[in-house]
Amino acid sequence: EIVLTQSPGTLSLSPGERATLSCRASQSVSSSYLAWYQQKPGQAPKLLIYGASSRATGIPDRFSGSGSGTDFTLTISRLEPEDFVVYYCQQYGRTFGQGTKVEIK
Amino acid sequence: EVQLVESGGGLIQPGGSLRLSCAASGFTVISNYMNWVRQAPGKGLEWVSVIYSGDSPKYADSVKGRFTISRDNSKNTVYLQMNSLRADDTAIYFCARGSTQLVDYWGQGTLVTVSS
Image 1 (cartoon, rainbow over the protein chains, first blue to last red):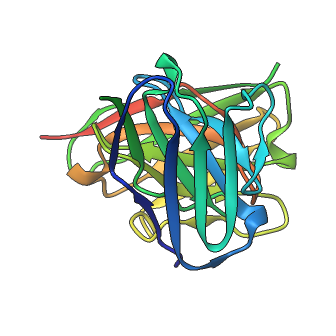
Image 2: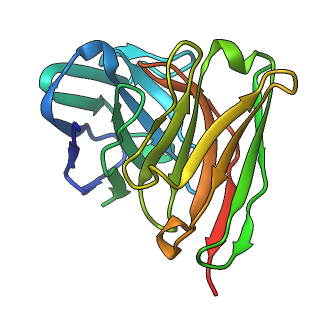
């Protein structure tokens, strides 16, 4: 079973700064099967990125994904106030990482 | 419009059983990967199970042998039968439509609390 490890657990940044979130897989994952989600408090997760780098419908271009093999990255180029929530990576439509919380510094 | 509406959650004693339902609209469940994903209070997301035509249902190791996923195509509904419930099964259970690449639609979730 592939394990996804996200880092850091918590990222403290200010609005307007760049956020870089990491997702590392215990085995190689095809880029086609790596997705990122955003979850706001009290809500269901929302798809941000699929296929490691493709933005889902309606997702602002400040969100971007990259990576291959075992190392994947979600980048938020300029943090907006509504971006300070929790992010998860997922592989093969199943296993999730443990999440990264982006908090206001 | 795609909608997923879960129901059936509640308070149940350890060792008990519960069946969750997920009523879908705007698409057909038979043509899609239908998942259950759970989230314990204050914790992260945990994939639980998936059902898809043409393949056998899949389960997380933590629920294998205790949970069963099924669907009723005539009702366009997916179910999760949960037996031998334990305290660590306490979570919000989300129904979600997806594929091998992603999960694109989620329900609002239903809370299952396992406690005596």
